[in-house]
Length: 196
Image (cartoon, rainbow, N blue to C red; front, side, top):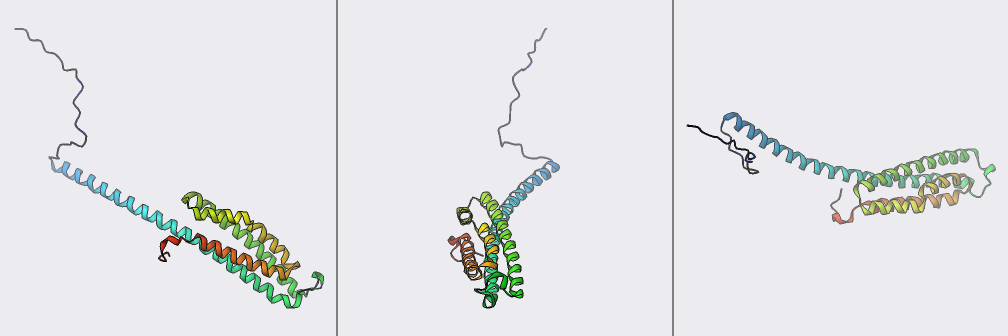
């Protein structure tokens, strides 16, 4: 008797997604348990990474606030140092200014140049932060700083210290107040007084 057999050419049957046979051997059970633990660990790490990213962003934002506040205090300090020299030099032509006051004004010119560079760095960091975090208040402050040309104004102020000491005091106070206001504008008012 002759038998004819036909080979099954249909594609192999696929298991339904998510349908796995339960592990039978102890090794399979351990592997399945390890995979579950690893998935739980990865989920926990992801949660921690998101929280850490939020904390670091808040820290970076608060650092920008502190740097602007520091720049503001430096303007008040420079204005005070100019004021200490005014009594002996106010209204006196530059060549007749006493040597001590002239040296102080030269030092203050250097300080103001350094401060304009410092504010430039703050603006660079503020721009990077605003681009990365897409926060409107940071972008608004940055645009206002550019519009006011704070860097150019501080450089000019450094040049004017020797020539216009009285006006320079007023300018340092203006920039101190303005830098302080910009720092306050970076703080999120929505945190109901619970912000760091």
